[in-house]
Image (cartoon, rainbow, N blue to C red; front, side, top):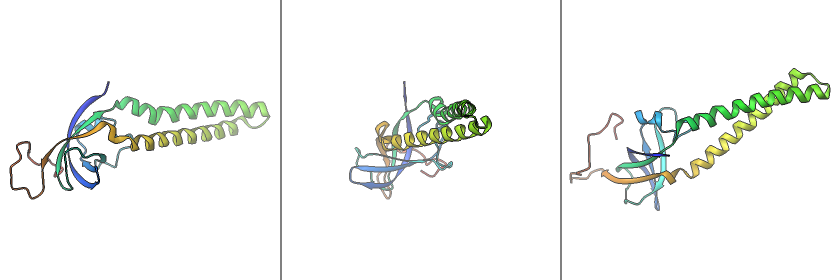
Length: 162
């Protein structure tokens, strides 16, 4: 079962009813699994519906559905590894049965199935990225740039400057 995590971010773009929010990497990133491939340590940018009327520059609190990091690691590393082993074994057997070098067949089979597995993992990630807004919701606007009114939900700026 997925858990809900609250994070703070800043709206970096808005178009129609969609906004993009930049979230800095925090300690909870290790347990999330939301970004399967990561983003170079700079945090991530998420897109979601704008139900709160947040604008560019607004600091917002975001509700995220946390994913299982073990499942993400299994897909990212386990599937290509299994494909590598299956391709090597299958290629060895096929090459030997066809009268070719079993070692060459194992190498070719491993390369072909590994490439296919990486393609499938990448395709899955791209499809998931299109649906990424499904588990994300802006809970509230914490502060607006240039606002002179104190926001009761506003907290101190964190080390990422948000």
